[in-house]
Image (cartoon, rainbow, N blue to C red; front, side, top):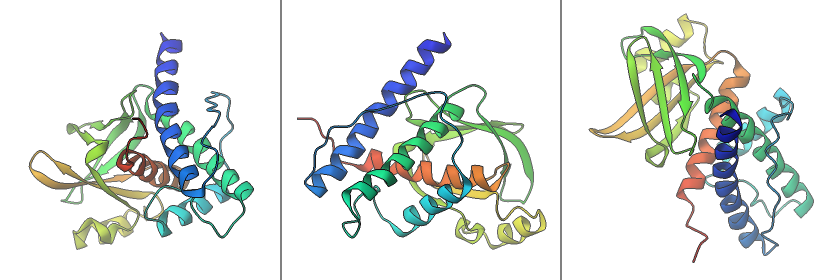
Length: 213
């Protein structure tokens, strides 16, 4: 049922958000308690707020909420923004058939597709006219917004031709045959920025040491 699926997503999201919060609070010497809210009625975030989050994760090498130069109240406010954005991302990507996108292959061809994440928030999949491919999020090594970071110079030229610079996003991961990458063109700059922030946070959360035991 849709209620059951929503509950699964909420539980999975709560698990890693708790891990995220505990790590941040341990570093700050604070209280690790938190309330996880997974309301389906959360309004879409403002683009300006999302751009601010993009800047933060671009300058950071780990989970948000660790900047000791700002007050605990400001750190919590920023963490709340991240939680809210990831809840939104999880909601749309775990619901079939996923989020519409285009896949940009190494030849410069564009293929219609949808990307999704399984309800346990562990596996990323792209399904489209050229079939399906994916990877475990634990194998995700990088998320990038610059077509030049894809390692294929011609792709940057192709993105410019498509006028898709603000919608382009790529992921690098370790596949069955070694290092691999995937380049996507999303429907808007907002969706690109949301993807960039949330995939980075999911990767960092998976890299965090377990808080159990």
